[in-house]
Image (tube, rainbow, N blue to C red; front, side, top):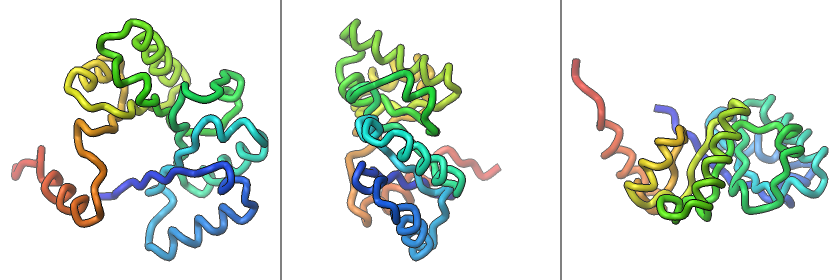
Length: 175
């Protein structure tokens, strides 16, 4: 089983001219591959130095990293940025998930982001899913990935390994 690790990247980090080299060196030191790393960048990080940031993202994707636009809809969303930006997925911020089941306005925003991602041929992640109703809603809107306390709270390394091992045999048969 190959694990995928998500790393939050700040504007300061991505604007560091040595960032790509430092990142590649670090993952090699830990016996990881770029394909195992998803870099999560908040959309507000895209505002300053957009062209440079996008060049770095393209370089990282060329090496094999995945790029996710995190907290989509909470920053300075611009469709023009989205059209020009090199990314692999969009994450719907938890602010649009928490009350989505009962709030028609949140449903409109949630549905629009999910539809936008689908139309761009990008997978979408719903952040902050805590209830079965939220999970059902997200799945009904064809959200591919779910993140949140519904599955697990954040875990320390030892707890994470135990969680992973206890869930790795689920759904498998001996056929």
